Structure formats: structure tokens, C-alpha cells
Length: 120
Image (tube, rainbow, N blue to C red; front, side):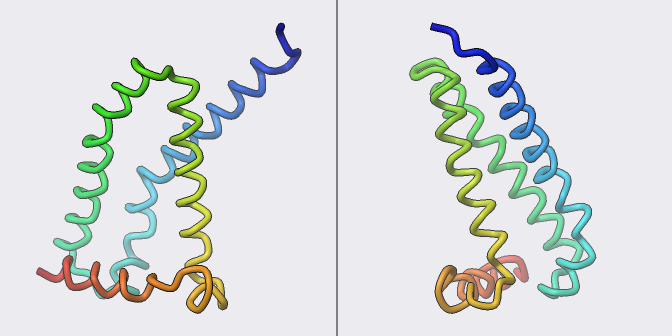
């Protein structure tokens, strides 16, 4: 059974995921001045943050590839997309007035831990 428009919707969804992924990869360079100012980061700490981000991307390549082989690309991309959307929504609430009290109770603690880790 072939649903009309399914292939176009799938391609549009995958295209959107690729665009968002590329945005996250390049956004650190775009928001660098704000990160340095708001978090009091040194250039070395900012470079470390970018390096850790790309190290994390490289680290998950092997498990994602294994998931592609074991459960297929459709299910793998679907599950990864669920986590990516949840993370994006969580981060979008970071400056929401009620987020400090209800939605993100550990955000301040995490921010403090990141500051300590990056100041080394």
C-alpha cells in the first residue's frame, strides 16, 4: 500500500532535520560573542566547547551506524529525531520566565557546572 505524498513528506522531514543539524553545527560560531559575554568564557573555553561538541558528534557516529544496520534507517532517524526535538524544545525554554522554576529545575546548576569545567 502506497500513500500518496508519503515520499514527499518524508523527504521534506529529512530535509528539515538536515537543515536543523547544520544550524546546530554552525551556531556556536554565530553566538560566540553572546556566550563569551553571558558565561564569562575565555577564548580557550569557547574553543573547548566547540571541540567537545564535535567530539560528541563524532562519538555517536559508530552507534548510529550500527543502529542503521540493525534496526534500519527509518527507525533510527525517527528515534534520533525525537530526542533532537526534545532537546531543542528544552533549550528553547532556557529564557522563558517560568522555566527556571518548573520546566528546567537543574538549568542553573548545570550552567554553574559548565562554567567551572570550562574555566579550568
